Image (cartoon, rainbow, N blue to C red; front, top):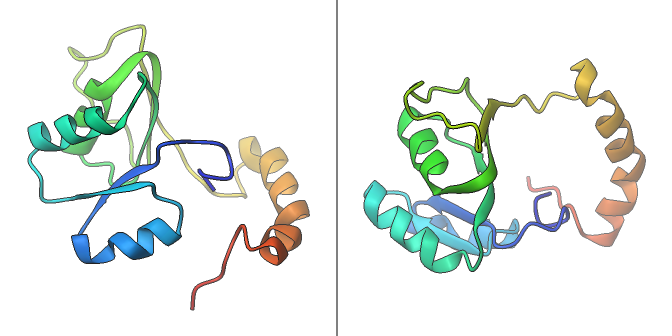
Length: 133
């Protein structure tokens, strides 16, 4: 869905043996999840050719949230799958971090969900979305 939304690059972390699967799902780069925070940060900054404005943290741990927030450019947004756990001393007005829920049942997501479901059949037919069993 990130690729369909125009995000590029799409950088993720995982075990190296999952790299091919993640690339078929839209990742442009797969980094070893066992890299230290410093090594991971250095690799991400090599890949990102412009300031990082959006980070989606699918792990949501304090470590991943802190790393993501540090990588953000001014004006950037960190979306976390768990409640935001950044220390208050780290927060600055020019960066945003928030906890997001992807449920179609939340009122704030109804408009987006209706649009997605209206196009779901065509996205599947085009191969833009694939079901994996």
